[in-house]
Length: 505
Ligand SMILES: [Zn+2]
Image 1: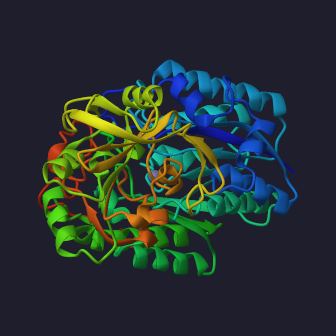
Image 2: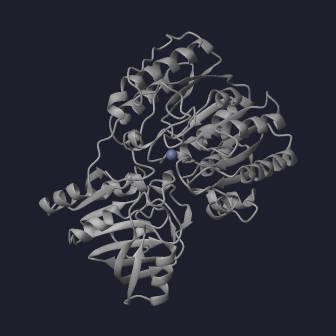
Image 3: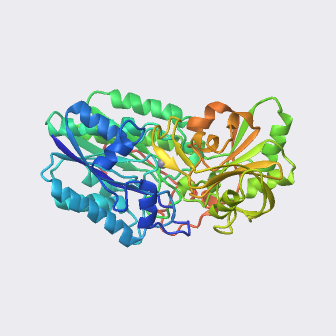
C-alpha cells in the first residue's frame, strides 16, 4: 500500500500587516530551500508530536509505504502571497505525479489559510490535488482545531480529521488516526460518508481551550459520539476568528461507515451542543494593573501567568507588544518576566555587548502602533544564547526549533527574553535556554493565548487572560469585518439557528 502525504500549513490573520512569503515557509519548515520531501521529513518528524510524526508511526503500524512529498509551514501572519502559495502547491503536485500510482493521499493542512486570491486556500489546494488523482482516490485530510472549514473542503475530501485539543497536544494521535482510517478505506473495510454543518457562530481563542470548561466536557461528549456504532470519526472546528472571510467560525463534521442519514443526524446533534454553549464561549479579560495588584496581594502563591493573547504570534500578532512590560516597569514590580519578545535588533545588540554589560535599548513596539510603544531605557544583559531548542512539553514534543540569537535582558527590574525569530512561547524550554526558570518567578507575561497552558499550566498557581490591545485581542468589538457571513453570533443581535433534525440541508 503506497500513501502520498504532505501539504502547506498556514493560519492567516487578515488583520496583520505583514504578508507571508515563501521565505517565511522556508525558514519555519526547516526542510531546505526547496522544502524537500522524503528522507528530510522522516528525519525531522519521526517520533515527534506532530502530524507527520503521526503519519510516519501510523504508516508503519498498518504496513503502508509513506511517501512524504512536502511539509511546509510558516508562523501565522498576514495574507499569503499568491505566487508563494502556487510555488508550493506546484512542488506538491509535481512530486505527486512522480510517485503515481498511489493507493491514497494524506493532506496535512491547517484549514485557515488565506492567499491573495483564495479565501479558502485549503479548498483550492484539495481541488488541485483532486484534479491530479481523480475524484475516486481515497483522501484523508488533517486540519487544525482552528480550521475555518468550508463546504468545498468537506465535499472534496473523503474524510476530514481535526485536532481534538487546544493546546494542540494530539497532532501525533490525529495523524496516526488519519493513516489508520485511510488504510481501512483503501482495503475496502469501510466506506466513509461525511456530513458537515456550519454554525452562525464565531468564538475567541481563550474559551476554545479544551483544558477549560465548557470545551472540556464538550470534547468528552464528542469522544462518546465517536464510540457509537457506525460512527468512524467526529470533528469540532472552533475556527480562526482573525480571518475576515465568509466561512470563518465554528463547524462540525461527522463521518459514518456508509450511513448518510446517521452522519447528518449526528452532525446536527453535535452542532446543537455547540450552539447551546455560545454564551459560555465568551472570554473575560483582566488588565495588567489588576494582575500586578493581585500578585502583590498573594505573595506566597507562586507563579501567576498573564496570557497576552492580543500579541500572540501563533495567531499572526507581532510578538513585540510592550503594554504589560511598561506597566510592570512603571509599577516598580520585581520578579516579573516577559517571554518571548521578538526584537532582532536588540537581541543582536545584546550579543555584541556581551553578558554583564549594560546597553541603551529601544525594546519592542517596532512592528506597528497597535501593541504599545518601544520601551526606552538601559538594560542589563543577563544571558545570551543561540536560540536553538527542542520542544520538551506535551505540544510538538521532540521537534527541534530555533529562536535565532536570543538574550535575557533586565530592564527596570523586569526580565525580558528577547528573540530574533517571532515564535509563540508555548514551551518552558524557550525560557530555560535563556537562563529563566519560570517556576521561580512571580509573574510571567507570555505571548500566547492558550498553547502555553500545555507546558506552563502545571507550573502556575493562577492564569489570567490579558486585557491588552492588539490584532489578536479576543474581543469582536475591535474588528471591522467586511467579508464574514452575517448574521453571526455574537456580532449580531437575535441570531437564530435550528437543528435540521437529521434532514438534508
Ligand atoms: Zn490552532
